[in-house]
Length: 202
Image 1 (tube, rainbow, N blue to C red):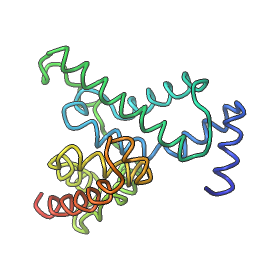
Image 2: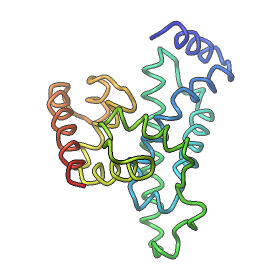
Image 3: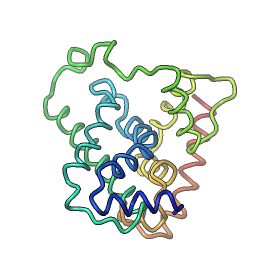
Image 4: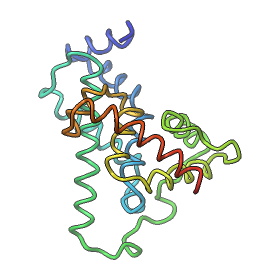
């Protein structure tokens, strides 16, 4: 952890709200990318990933007193665990609601539309997962990667985003997924290889 990160963590641990806000801001691009990928097309049609990210940050701030700051890795794990629960909770809400997907979907103007700068930030995050096609730009590249990602088994999707977006260690991922470190070391390269295969087909 660099000096800047260490200082932010130490200040956040001391109750410095500005330091905590700065930590959240540092992780926001990856968090948004994580939420967009893990939400899947159905939840993305219902709720804005930017709104989900804001909700995750609110949850973190509201539960700050339950967290101790041993370092930025622990903070990152806490943030993404909160995000995982948020996606699961919102997906369960929409499943339980049993509402007509088309009727209840967000109006086109409120869906996960992105400005050009938003798309570039997402693509920067997605480059941690794979190499976008040189022939696809902007929204086309985003959609291509997301379609390929959706075709992966769930455990492949999870290990990829935890390793490449959340930046968790193999040990942290193993704990998160209830597997051994050895299993994660085998799972991640297989998942990345299949993602590359899927992107070659979509």
